[in-house]
Picture (cartoon, rainbow, N blue to C red):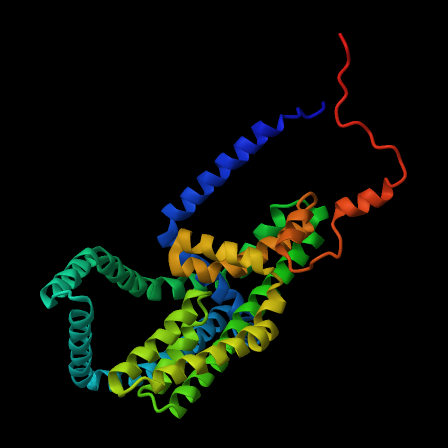
Length: 371
């Protein structure tokens, strides 16, 4: 019995509605799926250590020790940053006075050059603050959600590492036995790709943070180590992270220093660091292992931001890499895998086919038979 062939417009409509339904489900379940996706990345990253410990001690203790090591390392980093934040908090009253003085100078400059009364400026600022109350509420909700995520992500990671063999067996059993070699290859390359990507991002963050801190220390900016590491972490967010990373030290320098030479030096130093990162650090440690071309990277980052916000921007790149690995090994999806990848062919298929047909009489595009 031959399968019924449906027209293209019908298949395209079904696929379109399927994608719309998928996006709706992803957005509706974002609060559940975002920590789950982060847990998948962390579990894959910690899997080698857990497997090494599991060969020496019982499984449950290996998983617990692996999770404790990860928590201790992360807690140490947070503690170091908290010490810097505490020093920053001690200087808040003086910074507030200096900031108020800068605001007064700006108000006087606007009144002198543009004739806008101070009362109108204050009213405009109050209106802007009132309109941003919703945004502040969302930010507070995000903070409260983050507290919940701190509890749920370690739970997810523990369960994934503990039930690793159960999950792998399911992935093998859901496909036919003749596809087991291909499934094994996909799983192995997916694990390697995610591990290299996450490790590469961490290495990039450490190097950029050290360069940021060194530059700020040389320029005499207060809280250089804190601002440098914040800039390194923000640099992990594509496109917008670098802008915010420059804005923070410029703001602190404006409040704590006279003149504008330091601010100019910060901008120049961060531009040099961004150039080094984009052309040396990122290609060597991150992008070569992921193998996603720039066009698709920009597109999926914007789509990830529209779907899950900042978390989506971070998660989109490793998961599009997983999709490429699957596309490369599924019959009929290879062209989509090549479209996502960074290998650029010398010539397109139309030129190749044109050379094959060269010298032959071209077939008519459309033949109309008389009645």
